[in-house]
Length: 121
Length: 114
Image (cartoon, rainbow over all chains, first blue to last red):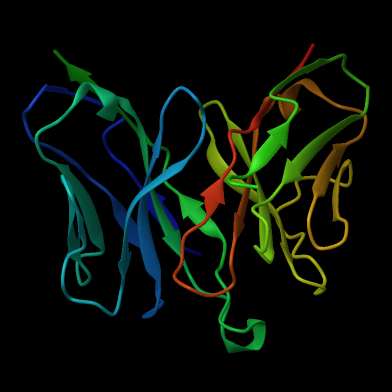
């Protein structure tokens, strides 16, 4: 079974600084996806960034980027120029596609326990 | 709709009562998921619906939990004879089957069993 581990329950960073959130996972699959989701107090899970395992290039979305190390099964999130609105819970998640018999449809997400990030003014 | 809508936003119920939680997915999304977020437990998969296929119920924690999806759109999660350990945030998400992985989540229903 796949597992996702986030070793930092809480982190804080000064506004405009850079912070890196850690995530490791365990799987024997070769084809999968990895995600970072943000959950503000509104409770809605918001997709921050995703990475396909078959892509060697690290995904980036504006101030957010990942360091994907497939062999080490590591998937860290870097937030540059941190803003007060980045304060939230951040969840790392793993997905194995359901496969051809399900039309290649998306699979279940397996989440880590989250990292609470506080951005301080 | 523009997003995934869940109702009610909050629900307080007495132990032993039945509750129904509703999810309206994004129009056209064929896949619908329910997750449970318990304090200290993270998010757990409950059930998955895909079109007219039989749902994947492998995550339902007990036979007190059931869900249905009518007309390939709205879904209702029912918890019978609620227990205090059922207290959690219940999140619904939907996705198109193709076009890139990643779901759109609703804001959840916070269920409190007293």
